Length: 108
Image (cartoon, rainbow, N blue to C red; front, side, top):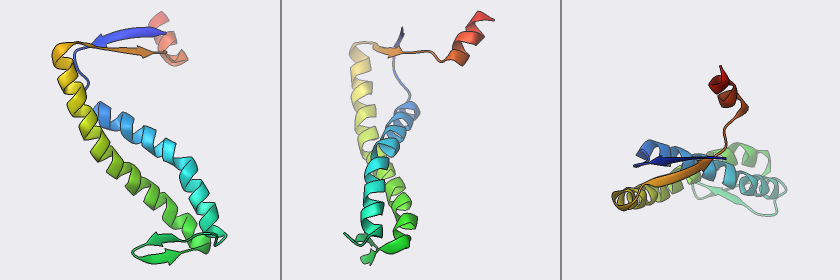
């Protein structure tokens, strides 16, 4: 485990981390919604119309992407503001593990 101190994180990095986390985090939930919608146990709504059956598997990834994008814009903006304010008072310490590829490049 390695540490690095940074003055501030770029806004793009914050948005990227939040988007990837939300996309992967909401994936199991969207799979459950897709399966439930496929078997007509609940309706998935798109444009005020219920969608069920095989069409759910086409709609759910679009909804997943839009939900993750919306949450990223909202939560990422708040995080970027909060981390920017925090960086005015104290540097940010990141704890990370290096990949095998990065370790091999360092040993060359």
